[in-house]
Length: 308
Image 1: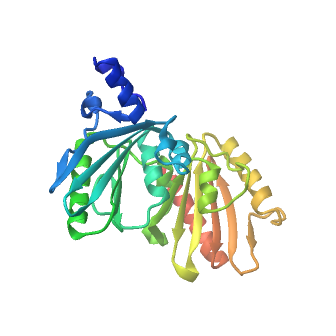
Image 2 (image 1 turned 45 degrees about the vertical axis):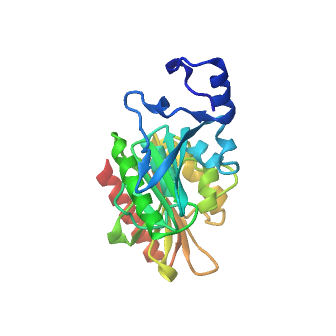
Image 3 (image 1 turned 120 degrees about the vertical axis):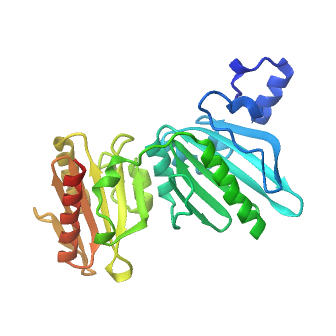
């Protein structure tokens, strides 16, 4: 990580030390519109060092997981550590993404819990709090559990969210999926921008048969629970032609035994079906009955019409 030298006039030796240690001075973020992280919270005090990483150096901090953030359009990471005597240290990670859609995508990819009312979407569990707001994704965690630490994590998250002045919209494709009335499990909603990410949640094919990109992402969601659960995959394309091509590739790769139909009943008695309407492709996987799968496709068509 290299500090932004245009805003600092410091001795060459200090510059070298900052670069070598990947540490940016506290004021490095204080440009107009920037997000300034808190310096103290409920007895925990920032140690005065802020590590910074960009797309070239992020693997120095999260080796093995950097691909996830890069796939969504990662730009910069700032990390601070907070200490308090006789309490576990706290760490805050603030990821600046290329867009609000990307920040939502990172948050959604591993979401499991219900919202705790921070930012534009959040969850808390096991000493880890995650939220997104605008083009920022924030992760805060303690190196150990205590009631005091959880309280401090919540307050640190609130202060950080308040310092993010911007808000953003989730991906437009989210508006294409049916809601609770159709049985949506809200914590299951994922937004992915590459087939590699999609395959980690639902394997479709080794190749990018759906043509997913940063501009054309897919929404994956679960409807119903246990034996009644089905998965819905929805993609909005720039044109109906692109959607039609993706539909044909999907059918050839995922449902080669469909014999010209848009559905197949698998050996476990469940149903997989796909449908293209204009620029939207919808796929239902694992429906407990043909009627249940058809109802979910119909609800998706209705949601798509409403979103136009």
